[in-house]
Length: 160
Image (tube, rainbow, N blue to C red):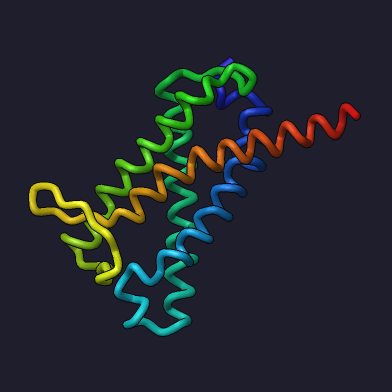
């Protein structure tokens, strides 16, 4: 049975992975605020809006990356997922989208700018912030791990 027809898989994504992804990304967005120019240029209310807006975008990126990976790798029901492969590919998909988005928004459109505190990588004259790239390398696998552990502990509690 494909993953998208498996009730357990859909519940895992909606009630396990996505809530952890939300909490982790919210914390990351708050922590990396000083790495963007808005830290010194924006009002507190605009910074709060930016954090919430970016966190909502992170949820869309993270769940879309996972769904894309599950579809492309033809994952079956939750019990048969190849977890390491899913985690690594989800991180890569999120990182690839974020690299494009950071380049487009910071360089092409000027929607945001990095502060002098943001470590950057440069390739072919394009600077991309390290923090948003690290966010997508670290957080999706961590959210998957925490969701797995939460589900395991919940199932163990029902067995006792």
